[in-house]
Image (cartoon, rainbow, N blue to C red; front, side, top):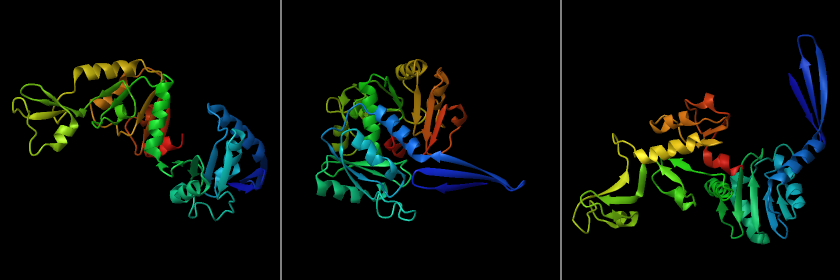
Amino acid sequence: MYIIHSKAKFIVIEIINPNIRTSKKFTINNHLLALEYIEYLKDLVKEPFDGKTVALDLANGSASMIAKEIFESMGAQVIARHDEPNGTNINRECGSTHIEVLQALVYDTGADIGFAYDGDADRCLAVDDDGKVIDGDHILYLCGKYLKEQGKLKAVITQNIDGLHQAAGSKVVYELHGSVHRNYCQKCGAFYDARYMLESKGIPKCEKCGGIIKPDVVLYEEGLDDATMRGAIRAISHADVLIIGGTSLMVYPAAGLIDYYNGNKLVLINKSVTPMDSRADLLVQGPIGEIFSQL
């Protein structure tokens, strides 16, 4: 049995063995651990916050211990709220679950940016200087954009057909199931964009020959494009790190692409259990938007 006694700068862990009625106590210097963690986080930041005003909503939780000190050490002027946890006020009308509180704080103080954490600081949302929420999807885009700029994001392989990866700036995208942004006349092959399809009444028809226009997507019982599959296999087989996110890995042949990965850094992120969980070097279970919002 473990009993944890927490004080301002120290944590005392008492281990009790009821069978032999003995106990041992271990004291951990909480302050030193925090300092080490702060230095670690600072090393990850490439751009300082000099001259920036940062608003923080710390949810009266664990971020209260170090968040303000981290941003101040990087040159920011910090405005912190809900940074006085008492054991009962965690997440109470504050933090990332009440993002409107941070929006008001940024607006009222004229801060350049704001960050809101939940009670245990494993989730984060942001607010820009106009008070607009930067949610998990936006943060995921920013992470991908950063990796691309660093030359570390070599390719994206997706079953989505919405073109959002290209909109986010990715150049090498293998769309296994095609895209609604590409549409072709089945008779003469003329190209039409998504806007034309949306504005068409009834079945979209070709302006040149009157043929039916079909989206360039894979329908049931249709085979995947050979060139796209070859490109995806090549990208996976040459990857140092393979990140798989937001898929049950139940739909084939896409799910079978994991077999072409030859590395030892397989990251699997999904809300539910997948058949490939045991093969992951790093397994994270949760909604992918929330997971990436923590990065």
